[in-house]
Length: 271
Image (cartoon, rainbow, N blue to C red; front, side, top):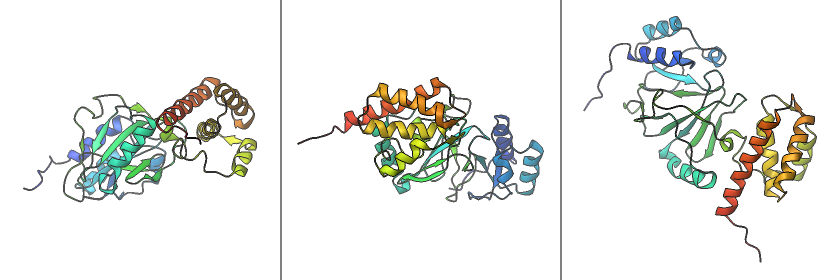
């Protein structure tokens, strides 16, 4: 059975709808994921409606994608079950807690794209967080419905999870930090942490660095109240400009809760 054709300019209509939500949209090659326009400028500013009309007039069968990151206010978790993504996501949720309900699309290949609100600070793209799981942040792209997958199937919004059906959930802190909370804190050599303690941290790296540093301290059994006071003081001295105290408190508390859940699931065994 052949795939039903959408109405003429259906992709353009969808693209304009996404643009009105504040998303930066680019044209993508038909049945592919490669932008067919010079898309780097749209990492900083969305296209105009006129530009969209020109693109889809020139390439009426083009797919469409959103430029993820601060420009669109989006970070997207890409789960590919063909490469173990389903099992990897289950393992991550058992370790860090279930992901919040958010808008979600189903890819033509049966994968999942989970959309989260960009936190307002740099979120790097990361490929292979675990098998079959990538994170698309600043400077990334994700193909949107109703684009056509190379398989011939269409991307679609999960029922009840389309834009407008529900709010976009905040990005969980354990997805935001440079690596997964609880996985990297013991992996760096002592020299790394000594250097980090003396490092001046610029805007865009402050929250993730505090999360990483706090996680290291939690894993070494430092008292939570001591960790919080240390992070508040370190933020005031090393972060430029310092984060508000309540933001530091929220980050440290979030990492502390993640650590507590992990300890409960994986208790330390001593002789």
